[in-house]
Length: 483
Image 1 (cartoon, rainbow, N blue to C red):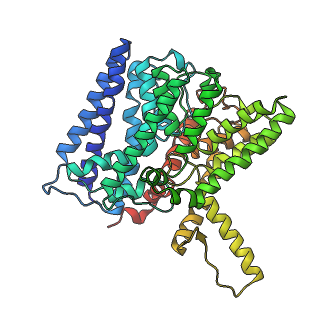
Image 2 (cartoon, one colour; image 1 turned 180 degrees about the vertical axis):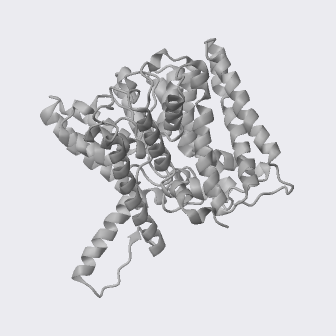
């Protein structure tokens, strides 16, 4: 493990992160509000620290080759320091003066979780609100991937960073070179974001609200500029647009890339995409029926609320149009299960991911089949592709680790005086990068009253969930640090 390339890369990353704060600074200047100096100081501290690290650790060789261990360390440390420095505008401005709250909010942003500790969102200045949404938009595709697209110009190879950052058991390479892949992903991300922005403008949103909400929809993050989230707009059109773009963001961006390049067949043949859309359909129909029988007299209204909340939860976005904590238990349980399923691999969504759920189900069926036909030679396939045994072991290992962390974190939260439902739902929603939960921290409340230690536990859950467990837990293995 070499410290110099790690510090050099993190320095470049911090410098870039500081430059992104110039955008909310421009917004603050435009609206002439009290957050101007908070961004000036934040840009100076973040980019200044990054610049010092970059030049102090600059290697003699022009090109750095990162090992896989250094890649994992850079990604993990990158997200941790992003949340630390990204919280500076909140603390300096005074919106969230406490380090714990600022770190929780920023980690929630960069991990696209959407859980918040802010009680009066609409009272915040425009620059702070824009930065809050930008943390989600940057974190959605991955700030590290953004750096990968730029770091080659600085002489830093990005392959190991990409391997550690891209979510899902199989990494899709769109282009021969990793930097080109990162740039291709970002181009697709930006194109769809612009399209969503235009659609929201047609729905009557202001340009500022449209920018913020499409940033958070594409990132499957869920931050809003309104205290009551999407319910504030009371618009079926806006709800429909956000449902469409949340579903798009919850699907593998490789498929969107291929679709934009004219490859339509791959999109429709993808097994995970069919499973993802099928799950949305089934969950929506079940909740619609439950709401129609127990809450709403109108089937159209029941379907409206059901499809929005199902799309929001399975994609781990976290936007809300109604307080689902008041819905019947059957609907709440379905939404809680969707928090664990999550979106597609290669999407901006979190949780376990549909492809892993699909593979675990196929593995279960395979074991049942072998009980009936013990001598049969069977293979697990996704479409026409056979899944290698090492991938299946990784998937099953991930599944066990995910549930184990959920159980341990729930036990830890329960020791802080929280009831079982609140503890379990808080862990499920943060580990899955969803946002709103059940119990004390439901859609109509925030995490502001959570115990300080609880906020750090949940921040850890957000980080582990966003980086898909292995990237963080591998750092805890003693062998990782040995030569």
